[in-house]
Image 1: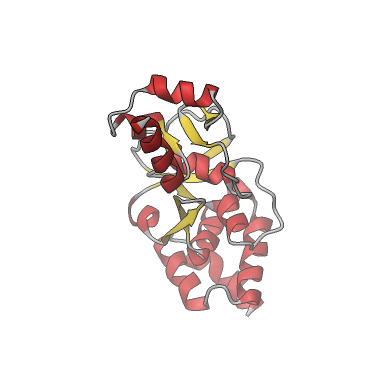
Image 2: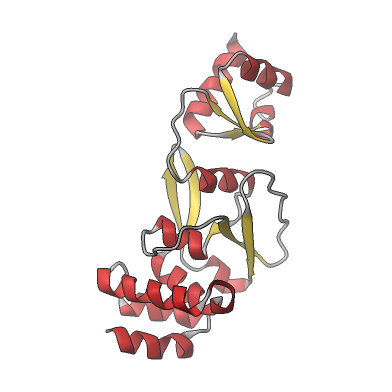
Length: 198
């Protein structure tokens, strides 16, 4: 019973756990399977478990991918959606990984991986907690800059729409956007569009 209580306590604290999270506490996987059979835990996807009474938000797929790939950062369309600055509905989770990073296989949620290197990867990372799980998402200014950097991947219209909405809603300042654009090396690309909307 002691191990079961330990598992429930850890799952409630973290929101969602991996089997390896639990093995670090000295609990064997067989107990996880038993607890799932008894309805105490729910297997959300391969190797990911939550409490059966946990209610997940609309950002469940972001939580799942963040647990499976903790060094990744939510970016582009998914970050726009998270920050409520787009009319686009992401049909997959968009994540950024650092060049040279290991990219796990994702078996449940469809994932679009963008590889970013150096300072551009590290700049603008914000940490947010959803259902007790910490996720990493790029800031609004960095997301807008990334949209222009990867405009061939997501579409220039999406990047322009995001820029207009951020300026209109004042969710980021012009200086913040230009600083992110400079780091992403798209300041000369974004400047004419920015001048047209301010």
